[in-house]
Amino acid sequence: MQTVTDLGPRLGVRPLCHALSFSSATYYRHRCRSSTSASASTSTSASTSASTSASTSASTSASTSTSASTSVKRFVPRALTTDERRNVLDVLHEPRFVDLAPAEVYATLLDEGMHLCSERTMYRILAENEEVRERRDVARHTHYAAPELLATKPNELWSWDITKLKGPAKWNWYHLYVVLDVFSRYVVGWMVAHRESAILAERLIATTCDRQLILPGQLTVHADRGSSMRSKPVALLLSDLGITKTHSRPHTSNDNPFSEAQFKTMKYRPDFPEHFDSIEHARMHCVDFFRWYNDEHRHSGIGLMTPNDVHHGLAEARYAERQVVLQRAHANHPERFVRQLPVPPALPTAAWINKPINPPQFASLIDANAL
Image (cartoon, rainbow, N blue to C red; front, side):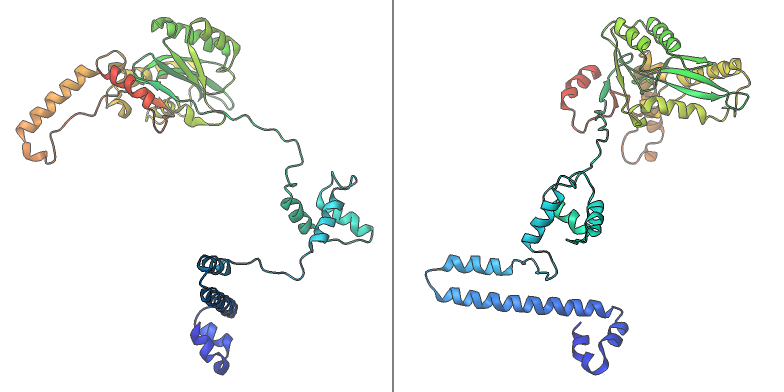
């Protein structure tokens, strides 16, 4: 900037700015700010020296220099005066304008041969007086709290959902109902039907609870907000069985992650067909898949154990067997394990849906279950 100031009178401001790769407007803006700050510093030093000469006002000099350095609102000659702004606000408060938008007020005044200010200025004056808001009585959606659910053992928290399986023709679908234990990832119940029905969902949940010997007050069942999940037959059944029910927030698939992940595992398998020829075909495929999923699939979320081992209390014995194998491998080739002794993946101690950031109230429960 100093180069342009020194050589500008001789070579021209615009060519120099172009050669230095910035616009002439930037230079003039910088020069304006420099002159403003110079005048402010001059006035500040003058006031400081004047106050210093008076020995009885040392504290006053500090406040004076501070106030001088504070920026003052710039005066705009074309701005409305205080009386004019009050007059505009009074006009906007008139009964004939009180329910109209500033654009309509502006146009009406023009038709009457009057111009008070621009439409945008009317909005500014209303905003200064906190009188701008949504005029319509729009719906205020209910705030749904995120469900925070914890499972520390099998048959403590279930998640269930329904997914569609493509049929042999266009717009032909079969509906797969799946009930999943969140802690062990074990599929405790499933069913393939022609349609989505609250009655069918009620029968599946009742049969699954009987098979798993669920006691009143033992279980929480989580689901999304589908029609079958929120239906009265399912709600009454869970109430009769002493089961707590929870639901996801609207349009929030992350609130039901375990069921969604299980459906993805199923549909991304290499043997999953493009469509099913019949409902019997769909049921036969689900029999093979859920047998593999429960008994053979090593799940990364449960220490690479099978859901069957975790659900039926076989995981600790399997963990000990893996530990023996790793210790034998370390004894045979200790040079291959550089950092530390090998250990199997840790067994699960808790499974959360929307785990809170700091859940101290559940620490004792997890420790007791681990013992």
